[in-house]
Image 1 (cartoon, helix red, strand yellow):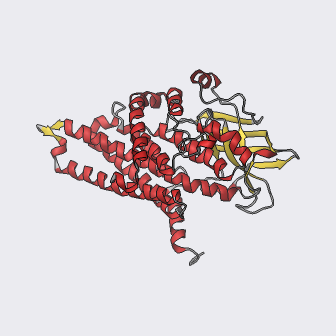
Image 2 (spheres, one colour):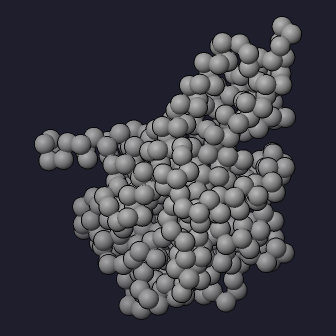
Image 3 (tube, rainbow, N blue to C red):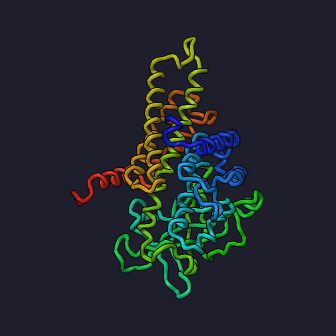
Length: 405
């Protein structure tokens, strides 16, 4: 993709900064993946670089950059490791943006500067055991107790549940309401699970932030991919949440969450795009040095075709992702384009990484080469923040409008 189409000089500077930081991430990514260990040391460096506050205004402690700059960060990080990319993406789009978009001035002043600085990590709680693609099936309840709410229930597959402290979650506040009605968004806070590790690196924990008693993290999930990203169940056991932590309008939380997910799809599309590009880069390195029958395997037509297909699809995905990001940045409708970008880029990531493993042969099936990790990391991109099937429903509804029920 031509740099001048969407990128200013500032965008290119952000890209170069992240590419420099990739030299820190790349050597450590394999070990963090093998140990399923959250990369606190690298997270500290990301915080120092300002990567957790890229799109937020300076008056809220952010870098004051635009949305495209943020998408560039996700895209570039994912070329070397998806776990690092999702750490920034989940924190920024899912955990922080609802507070920026729907929070009161007091809520913004309390939480956003901490989050923009990476002083604490944020997350987003929507999915439940019986409410995945059908998020209207939320069973977590919030009972009004006068000056506070009491929450009971749980959220599953929550990024940063164990290492984060600030979460935007959904709970049913009107039990008589049907389906998506009667759901409210709340800001809840908890102690990080690994306080010692967070304190050691100086990020990820803020003792001055008031906590909500009864908000707990369950055991860490043992996952196929994104293994250096923390994923757990977030549990509410008679959790006490002050009234001032209601986010936006009561009983309007479902609309807020859909708005957040629309933006999140662009970020996940950028992440999937980065995985695919990283896989292609590894293939170019490998096929030009690996020799069979006396010459590099890149000289064979079958390899030509595979590389050409990967590069062509990546070019198409770049345009889909950055076009959707451009629309969002300029305040234009982007729901359909975000779903298209996420759908195409995530399915491309699986095709590209599977092909990359094939081109690496037996070596591609070992942890000595990063393509096997990329293949594992790619799969969740077709599932998280709306499955491929949900993206197709969103796109079709945008096309058909009121023509059909």
